[in-house]
Image (cartoon, rainbow, N blue to C red; front, top):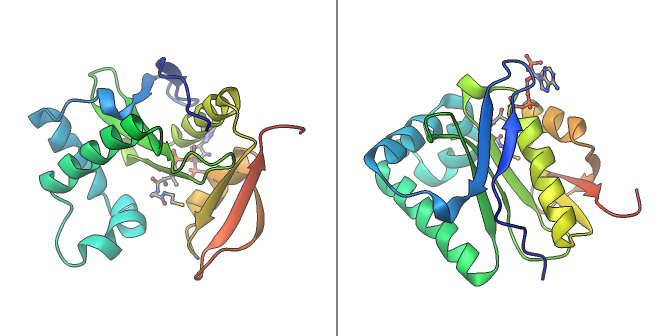
Length: 180
Ligand SMILES: CC(C)(COP(=O)(O)OP(=O)(O)OC[C@H]1O[C@@H](n2cnc3c(N)ncnc32)[C@H](O)[C@@H]1OP(=O)(O)O)[C@@H](O)C(=O)NCCC(=O)NCCS
């Protein structure tokens, strides 16, 4: 059962040179500043549209949603998967996040990135792939809903190829981690 290492990974934004630390989500305490940042990021139009609109409906993403996500992250690490990570900025506040959604040998990944940190998504997902490879994963998969062109662009940059349709209307993407 591949479980990635918990050592923080240093990320560098390719455009701005800003540095971030990618850390396991269960290390992030639900302080007021952390919850406020998560609420702000998850209500950004693009993140909300693609990840939270279906769940939240007409209401915004709130502090209880953020608390729930942190609790989900802690439970996942305790159980050996799903394994979620958060990219922290220089102030130790969330900027982006990603996860391996199961302990499968070829887990599905998830990811989002705050608008002020645009361009961090690619190094973050590359780092996630590196952690997954070292943990013994053989590949990664991703599902993308129709029209999510930024997600598709990120996946292409990170070496994923579209391999067909997933259940529902999403497209299915895959990146091998062993054997090329
Ligand atoms: C999808 C998402 C994570 C992409 O994040 P991102 O940080 O913008 O992604 P990328 O790393 O691909 O960076 C995009 C921008 O940075 C630039 N960039 C990326 N890598 C770069 C590099 N190595 N050098 C220079 N510029 C780079 C790109 O040119 C691009 O700019 P552009 O859009 O103006 O062309 C983000 O849009 C998001 O959170 N979306 C909502 C949630 C979501 O859809 N999640 C995925 C569900 S499947």
